[in-house]
Image: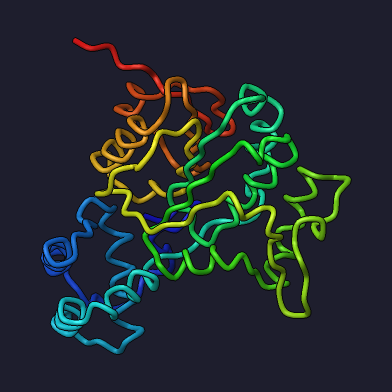
Length: 289
């Protein structure tokens, strides 16, 4: 799943209905059976818009054209995921979150090892931000960061740690809100075409492909980021993902969700609010019946 994330594109609705609701539901079921990727609990309108845009991009006039390509051509399907997903991440996105983590949350882990999962890491800006923050708190050498995403294309971008100069310029304001007295050159090597994160801030990160809906978490974590991943999930799928994260967290572990994510009522049985402004929650321990 995408995260900080990558979500289904939200854009102006195409004028023509190239695929009906029934056809789309049948296609999503076929994709689940063929590839094991389940989009059936995504918010229907947004998913339909993404599918329609994909059809328009490839000049498809009917759902039969899409059905044939998706189910017969694995490479086309995998590239189609990237077309349907859009990155909603940036360096020091929502600086108040990082300031809260720096000034309050991370102080609890001084002298300890720290295990962090970025679920839906997208193109990597969020996990590199975390690495920089940990270094500022003298915790980086004790930390292990896991960054996962459904999109192989996004993961390859994240692993490269390279961002265009135009994108880096967009990140300056949130960076300076967190680091008013530092230079972004302290953390990136600059060329005439791009900026690349310095090795120090990537050496403790493990990137891997992961399906948040189906795959196990693969570890126990002190802190999980799942930002802007659940925006287009229905409540049933949100609860499934939140339950997975709850199981993956250590006792009293923290969950950070996106500013536009909504914690469903069912999720409040698993997590308690730590700070509602920054969307930071804390794991509730379940009492056995």
